[in-house]
Length: 122
Image (cartoon, helix red, strand yellow):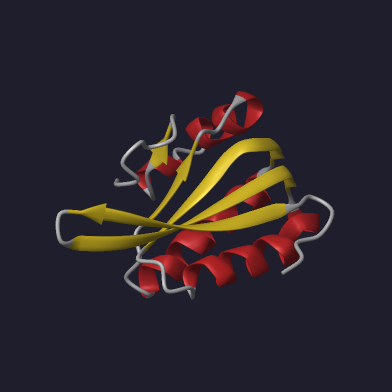
């Protein structure tokens, strides 16, 4: 998997709760998320969403910039995950990214977790 100049990584985590095992695909986006980043971001989201994971979490802690087009990409990724019955959330937005997500009210579409979830449930 290669994800362009902006870079991204996928980690798959098993969460064991009693007798239930839940798989979470954690995707780390870094750099920027704009129209020019469409190819790597869609590839990243497709890999996460079609993986055997039960849920998808996108870590935005290393994302420095997002434009309205980038927000639309997150909404598209949420829809793609929703169509496959996989809960989708983003976590740890900071700075301008956090401001943009708040301004565009994306928390009405999918969960925006301000801190990394310690139990990986949302």
